[in-house]
Image (tube, rainbow, N blue to C red):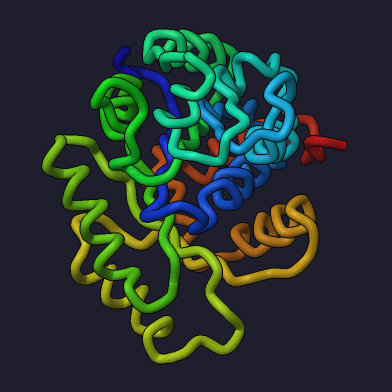
Length: 259
């Protein structure tokens, strides 16, 4: 299902645990605070303690966006085993159906100004029957946003991800680096500049490491993002003008999602 005329982004990471959920939630919070109706979807989440409820990733996204969508639309597949999606699904005798995911995303996007979809693991993570996260990205039709670490090795991992996306003809909006420490080492200092010059897409933001609960981190980073010098690049990559990002804020005041 192509995403023609639908504003949104599909967020992937260069590996598991790089901070893509946090970045997705920060973007959702930032846009929702500016009056946009933000839809969020975590199509597949494994390692969910109680699959009858949203997992921690999908729950954070729902809170950050202030979404009122049903749990089954926000997260169609939830598995208890902390394994790759195909293995977690196999243990529960379930097969992940891309059409079910596409229907959920389509239902969400019809009610929203901007939709944020967060993948599972990296672009090459297996989902079902030889199909990968990259195949799901292609079916949904949204451009890719790559979340990467700042540590040594991130240049290799990030370039492999962006090159794979290009080989599969997946449009890539850019890269966001997550977790830059207050005192970065030489490798961490070099990562944004190296990726900006070597990758086939731009570095749209470099978010610092912050403390607190996950919700507190989202709130802090959304404020930091608002004053980021690269914010115009990010909004442009997301096909959002500064005026669109403030769409309803002047009319109804900045709302505080999730409260």
